[in-house]
Image (cartoon, rainbow, N blue to C red):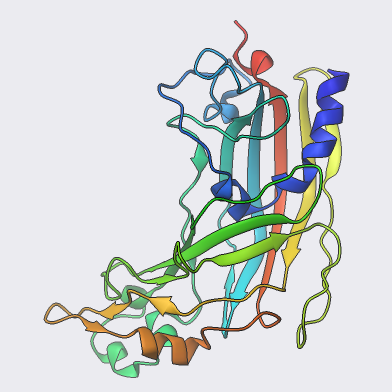
Length: 280
């Protein structure tokens, strides 16, 4: 158990990013085991029977923060949960069918009208029907070294509307041109006009009864990244979809250069040995 506590301290740099878990290139283990009572929150972590390299189970919850690109600032209002397992080196994230990163849409202030500037849509649809959501997705293979920061994370933001007014493939960032985050818990050194901001490491706690290690109230930050323009956005009113990438980019201030964007992610995390979670 002492070794696990030491390992969890080394793991701290990778546990906060929400979008971090997305990014750890992992193969999905086939099948799904069920952890014993008291450990069911780790059900997305493969047991050793499912994957012999999954020796430590990790549950990470993004509890707050925000993601700002260009003129759009999206608060993280709904928890994003990551569950999976890592090997003895605390690398090579894997998960079963119940694990991975939860697809959690976050509401974008201003909705579709705020994104496009098309005020006439308010005459056609209710404000609720014009809601806009952003879901973070992996856009490539991250460069993750748990022994040092930053965590290099390529992502893309999927923009969706309940009525499908923007089509199905409206994204900021793509696999070929991702949003490249470099997440740290210390202090950033961004290009101007942004000024330095600071994250913080989580407070470590250990439950001797359950053998679960906790990191609470940690924060990852990055305000040095650039944001590409939107692609695949169409105005679809049920007739002939019209590409509005240029309109979205103009209204939203995209693409936006390094030093004009910001990511802040608050997190809690739980860690336990797989043998403990799945023992009879």
